[in-house]
Image (tube, rainbow, N blue to C red; front, side):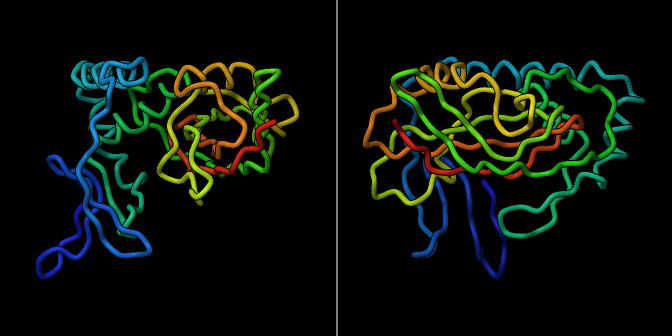
Length: 228
């Protein structure tokens, strides 16, 4: 739950108890939190496993290693959804960066890294081929960066944006020329495992996040897919 305090409260975003607070063009809103039907899905179990791994990993660090994370927090300050600069604790920084690295299949860093270059990739076009069972993502990508591919389930045509509705699908690298994401057949297979077979007439958004070697994660680039 993210809250911005004023004379009482001026903004709220996130979960609190059984409710979700959000804001949009129509103003602030609150609604009842919808619980997942399958709390032990493969994806949820993977998230819990990573959390346990990182919690235990922090406990096993040497004092010198932990000090490196305490010293690094000012170098990794970030801006939250309200536009305020936020500085994480050493433990939270360790968990945040390493969770991103695990999400692309990279190894945990026990000593805090230096901030690295993080260019946001640009997804220009996504084609979902339901006959050949591929999801082809093209755009501007960099070699030696990891990419988290995200997508939405099939949405109604009245939905304008996939932002905040996307879910993790698979971690991939760039193609040889840097113009697309590798293994479009694996992207399709993981989409089906996460949601279901995509159907012509649905509105589906697909995009990527960039993760660099320090574990920093970019904002996402996401577009509406073409279904053929």
